Length: 111
Image (tube, rainbow, N blue to C red; front, side, top):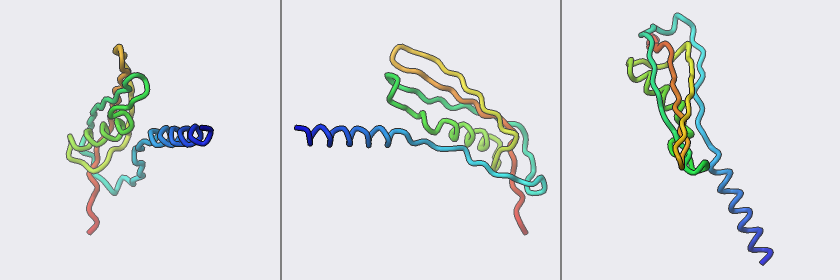
């Protein structure tokens, strides 16, 4: 019985660690000669925690919002980025809405 409880504890610990993954916003540094500014854009993405512990589209909401803002202007990247987050609560879930705004740029092609 003692062996079984250790195996279950290790498996549970492994599942908890596997759930703690996420994505990060890509950070690049560009010289002003490398791009053309297309204009300001913003987008939002929402993720939720069901019962306070089950993530639903939670881990990648920053990246989804940034990608949507860049795509809206047809650019390649974003500079002067600002991130705002709001949350809301409903009986069995907590939602997080992330708003990403900034200037979308188009990278100049190297000849």
